[in-house]
Image 1 (cartoon, one colour):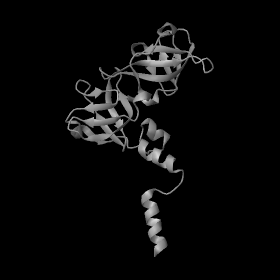
Image 2 (tube, one colour):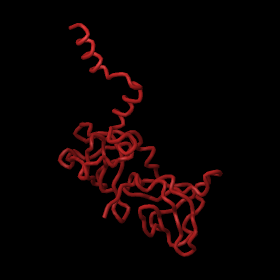
Image 3 (cartoon, helix red, strand yellow):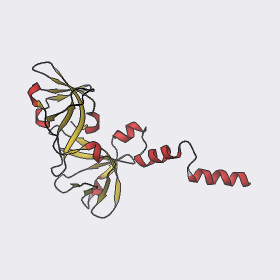
Image 4 (cartoon, helix red, strand yellow):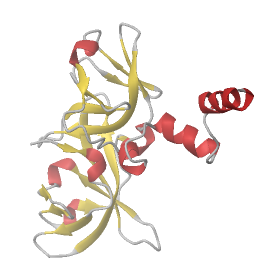
Length: 198
């Protein structure tokens, strides 16, 4: 079974042994060179904002509303390892063949916390090969065969974080719409001007 990493943010973290509320997930951290998830940042309190670290190997189960860890001792005050997924959203994904495939909207992970696919803008889905694909600081570079691995998103519902926020729009479409603030797009303005002349 796989899940989208973006769906984990905001879930309540509970220890099974003590039944304690440990806080809410505030970040999903990737190990870019390894193509896997390192763990989760957990915010203990909304007021003080103290963040704790829960390593992926200490996550027992993730449900619709909760993340379970065997014991509260696994949620430690420590600096998160890796790179926050939220900082990577919107990165360009390009093939070694030099083709821009889209921008990152979410990642799909398996039960072993390995990244198995990328959700890209334009409702595209890319199965990845963690051994040869690079999650860089400014871009994600995938193998030359990536165009063959690229397909329309299987679920077709735009499950990436930006798609959920902007009802299926890509980040660029949403930014354009928000920048225009209700004004017609340039192509629509030209069409309207042509109608005014006739």
